[in-house]
Amino acid sequence: MIVVMKIGSPEAEINRINEELTTWGLTPEKIVGKHKIVIGLVGETADLDPLQIQEVSPWIEQVLRVEQPYKRASRQYRQGEASEVIINTPDGAVIIGENHPISVVAGPCSVENEEMIIDVALRVKAAGAKFLRGGAYKPRTSPYAFQGHGESALELLAAARAASGLGIITEVMDAADLDKIVEVADVIQVGARNMQNFSLLKKVGAQPKPVLLKRGMAATIEDWLMAAEYILAAGNPNVILCERGIRTFDRQYTRNTLDISVVPVLRKLTHLPIMIDPSHGTGWSEFVPSMAMASIAAGTDSLMIEVHPNPKKALSDGPQSLTPEAFDRLMQELAVIGKAVGRWRQPVAATF
Image 1: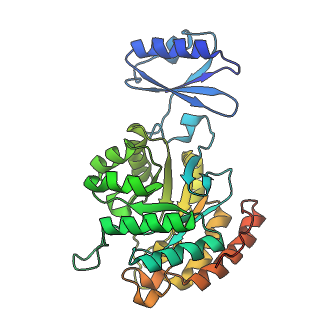
Image 2 (image 1 turned 120 degrees about the horizontal axis):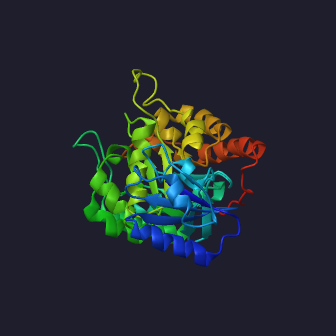
Image 3 (image 1 turned 180 degrees about the vertical axis):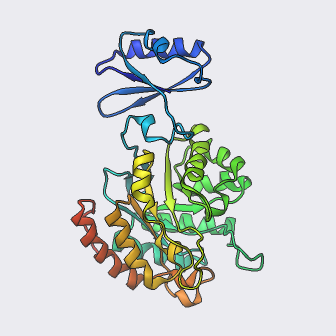
């Protein structure tokens, strides 16, 4: 349930309303929009009469029920306004959201060694990326596949962050590693395999860094939004939804099926920012450029692209990784689409 305040409502009156509704056993959450202030009510609201709440103050414009099961993630919860996630990086704050330029995340699937990760960081930054992705802990289908270097890889990501100024995005697999990851990462990634690891979602939601939530391989959109609700309910409002392809019946020609239609659907359902990962979504580097351009045309807020200096020798996900040279070309192609939809940043001069 949400309480929409009239324009110009006094702060003292909003505080008084919050205090009174708290005595009703509800948890009020103040949401400041561009034009109005909304109070979200969390708790047992099913039996409450909206007119009863309306009588609490003449400054209340209307009281509405949020019909979707994902309350905080619902676009209705913010009166139709999009939220934005502000991420602090060494080079300054980067904002991801539908009213901001597209942010590109790039880097290898796994952190392999210091020279490689710093070289890739410098190359993707020169091409225009704002964030470096790289796995320290890797969830793999086979227990015999490379699982990442773990804690030592976090030190290499920190070195790449210092050398490049890029923000760092890396995945948490185990809550026991969360504190160590938070010290290095600017964004905490929850991968597809952990999308419904609810105990992990609660812990990730209780820490302050923004969270990138990837869609599960067989997750419906509602499953995905309910997973985001766990993070939001735990207190962290800074969630980015990442589509990375879902499992369908065809595994011969693509690794997954990239669901680009999810962009307009999510835009209707939720206020949360959207990212598309065409690397995992297709599984083959030759298809990544087309899907990346299509994602921008569809309205994504961000892209995640895998880049490796020598994909044939990559310890994980080599077939879907672009070389730095291919990434340079892709960024030039993306600029054409991005400028056409009014969402591209100014080019960055090469520094290597």
